[in-house]
View 1 (cartoon, helix red, strand yellow):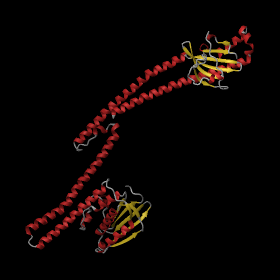
View 2 (cartoon, one colour; view 1 turned 90 degrees about the vertical axis):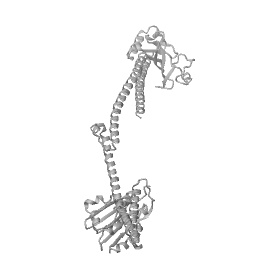
View 3 (spheres, helix red, strand yellow; view 1 turned 45 degrees about the horizontal axis):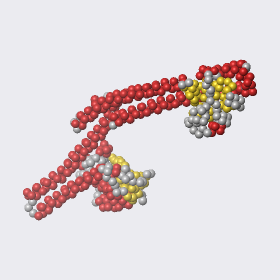
View 4 (cartoon, one colour; view 1 turned 90 degrees about the horizontal axis):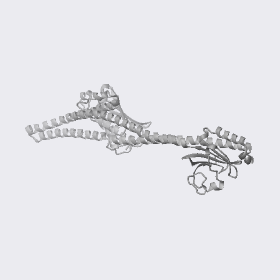
Length: 497
């Protein structure tokens, strides 16, 4: 992966510099031609203006023979309109395509004449030479800068081992051809290309080398991190010490994340150990009783009644063991994120009413009254069987820990986007400092043990797991010797299968 990233980065650097250099080269070239073309156009318009003012066409013969004054004026125009007269070339034709004046730097060379509109139409592609018109420029760049189609043309022609940039214009007083030598500009562009061809590889190589150095340094640092982590792994997390890399700024967030992960793993590990300890302790007691009674029956039982008594007692312990195992299994299923619920639309009102009717029989044995405040048609999406577990456990706990003659209130109603179930009693209550622990597996409050109520400490843990599985929420409010209020809310809407 590291080598692949280096290759991708290297290609990216080279491509970026090449693209940027090409853009700069194109920009310089286009800028030069745009400015040059504009200057050629303005120069041609200046000549045209002079021709119209002096009526050269009408005085052609005298101009050619004796009109030295006009020649001197044209020479001055050539020098004044040109940034560099030696590199500018001007030739003026009359309407019969005869030369009436040209700049001295042309010597015997004649600039081409703008073809007629009919001839121009025959030039079907801009970059194709037509042999019939050997005076027509080979490459036509742009036309119709001013006037009608065919009146103006920009072109490039070969000239003295170099090239001329030409502007050809057909005017009412004659044809004007103005050119500019590109020799120096071509040398300039050649120098730029040379700089780019040499400079880009050097700069790219330096950047790539710099990247490799950084990568090597980074790899050496990550190698050190790997050594630290390997050492921790070999010790099975017994020597979890990140002090070697904690002080390095570049690993700060990484170390913080690792320490949070370690704390979470340690907490989960401790929970597993505590669960194993509590489960073994919870299972050990009935197994010890069961074993003792069976051994006693083998050694001392004489009659059928003795054996029946032992078997009945053993059956009670077996039932107790079975309940513990079943509850633990239910909790494991509820806490398994891959375990899916059997979702359906559940009429929570009917479920609560039905369970209350059944639990009233148990409550009557302790002369406990159950008061109901249940709204009709409270509907949720959930697993009906598991929701029944929640309600039964909550009511069963309230009955167990409420003294004779007590009261239990159960309420159900819709509130915003949730269905809210409240079970409230006036029983023994829970000390405030112990409330955070009541959802732990096998946890039982000292008050519960004092009153002698039998239990496994798994009921509320199972309730919490099922509520979480339904993406609901459960809260507990309690005061010692005054009672407990448990509130459960279920989301209303589509399930989250």
